[in-house]
Image (cartoon, rainbow, N blue to C red):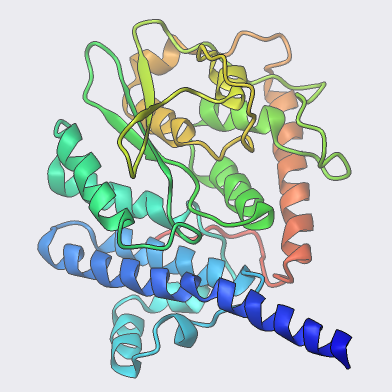
Length: 314
């Protein structure tokens, strides 16, 4: 009997520990809808963010339905009416990014890219109202060259290795700039080699960021600068003494550099990978390996309805 009571207690504590997912989700949705009403051209950001949250709720260890996340029936119905596709597709399509990336884009759209301090303050104000465990990025990265505006990125706002691996794979295959995605895919774990953080033997998409490009990460809460981790050093040639390897693709530097390369061809061209293993054939093989691992993780989290589509706002 005592063992059964202990099991029950553990189960209840685990359920309680997962509850901040829904409270954070609701706060973020309410804030983004409010901002959207004041920010022209931002509806797509709310649309994709909603889909991303609904998808992550579905694959969370305690699965949350749209009704769990948005308990007010009037609000739920209003959102379903305005963003029907997000609700129709969260069980069939993968998000291209994690939710906080859309929050960042909204803030940059509002504050304008040149107003770095306002962007940091706005992010910090929101993060301080949220539980740090769910749907929240811890890090912001700012990348800029001598001739460019600042380009921003946040770390993955997923919880646990499975959700992280799913969204990192999805971003590699559907959203990130091809050079940045190639650098991440160089290290993305292969099925059966999950413990191995080494490079793929057959593909190397890593590159050296030009010396005149600054790529600086900050803690969103404290606004203190953060040195690049070993993973970012390995992928982008960023100088660091940090020994910690975060999962490849998790860091804010990835999204920030992807945004930079997408918008600044000249900087991208100077960052071209130089390895002999960087060939179209090898890249295709790496993409297939990422897709294979992604399908494997989706089965592990009991998401069996994916047909290969990535969600974009219509």
